[in-house]
Image (cartoon, rainbow, N blue to C red):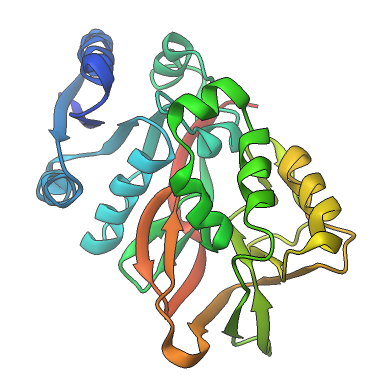
Length: 297
């Protein structure tokens, strides 16, 4: 009897070796269920992608231990290899929007148990940036994305989301909006003032519902400017996550989008929380290429 082989990918730099401990425990559980585990790890993104790509021919499923950033690395490897396997998630990261979105248990033991019993596979959506990099939950750019670089982990833990509001209010009048060109195949062709842009692969991030949504599309929300008049809608956004019902906000949905900066100004994106590609970029939504282990209904 030929056993299945599951790759177990984790970040070797994960704090205090917790991810490695989880991977070791998961490997033991898989063996009990006659599944052969193959541990995959690296301490940097480039090597991690290479490690996963090299292992894919041996694997039937890829299990990812970590949050959105680690999931991004794994799916990016699948994109570059042009080979999509079913994936499972152990949500052990700081940001677990992807796991929350599909009701993956946030309890580590429960998430591991889901992989061996009482699960089903569901096709899930994600986006691809410039044909090479995954967008699991979100892509951002603009002044708020830059502000996030200034917020220390200690400040996040102490003050929560309000720290972003404090930092942003301090920037009123200092940071100007960018002129950004948005083009898509469905007819969108606009040059818009953009103080901050948020592209999501779902209608919600971290439990916040940003808008009613169409299936199989990305959701784009733009904060056009921020001044004294925009403080109230920004406060509403920072504290609730909701961007709708404001003249300061532009929203639309697309399957694909080309985004470029006017005047060739350098603008850097953040994808799933990490610094990523500079504009111009092209982002497309994919809905039928990736299967995820989810709780059985």
